[in-house]
Image (cartoon, rainbow, N blue to C red; front, side, top):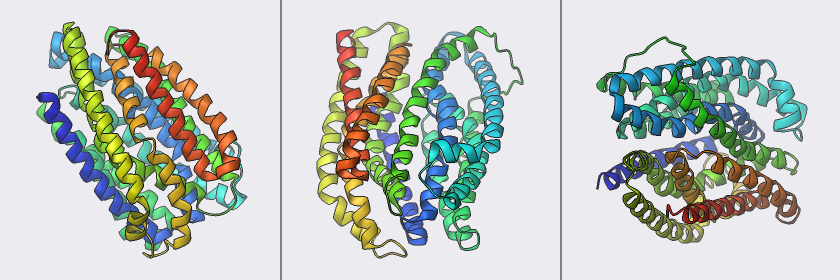
Length: 434
């Protein structure tokens, strides 16, 4: 029952977040359309987003929650916050070094890795926006860890509100700053949203008695356990993020404006149902799985996991059918004819969105399967699976892009992640976890 309430709360908050995010996207499309400037903004986020995902948002949050929950249960809240502080201190120091390196080498990275197919003017714009995004990156590295610390205590409300506030910050950037600063106004809004993302969670830290320790005791036993789990997860997330970087790289060689933005928006449309169903369930599931594994209750673990998978699969398949049926009229109603978003933009967006929407179930099941392996503190299997997914994705891009253009890139993503989901679930069944 506790898991159901947590899942329902997260689904509600994620749903509100996605609706506000949809409003944000309408405003962005009105202001910019699928243009060269928006392409530059979207691709500029990739490397900073990769650092955040590797250090806190995806890698450490999943690795640290089982260990924080275990420390809380066995040693108490003071010990848990001590471990949390040591992790946070090291992560922020690492993020600061990486931010400096990315700022220095932004231009060669953009020219040779991110978008080699762009002309020089667009590459300069991408590098400039990337440097600005590094400020938000540093804030998110802390905020992502705070989310993990609160979720380890089965507190989901404030972490669930954080993405909503992030969208509010971006909306402020579009409405208040884009007229004066152009595409840079959107980047300033991201920084404001990052501040709000962290700020809304501070009352939770106070409520649970957080006390910061300045220690950098990297040989601490708990910290070493975190990094043993985190190491494979960092590589795992890096591989997943590499897929998004490669997406923009493939897109940069496709003629015309708005290709990268169409893929980004198509991905965003897919995430509307996927986040509400798959991410909400998987996020609520991880602390519960960690608790059951800590107690050694294999029967309850299997029952909980089977129920979650069945419910998520049923809901995502239904969502896929409905989304495919209504994506075109919805895009025409919400986006087309508003500001700079044209019928040509719709024609560019729809094929990408349709191919991404086929992957709602696959992406949702990957989230559940990966969290199950991490709850069992077995990180190497998801790492190997992610590496195979990246190889499959690249191969499919080479095969499908000549036939389908940018829609082939989206379909390659769907097929690769669906194959990963099936493979991980098969392994869990072989290991008698399912």
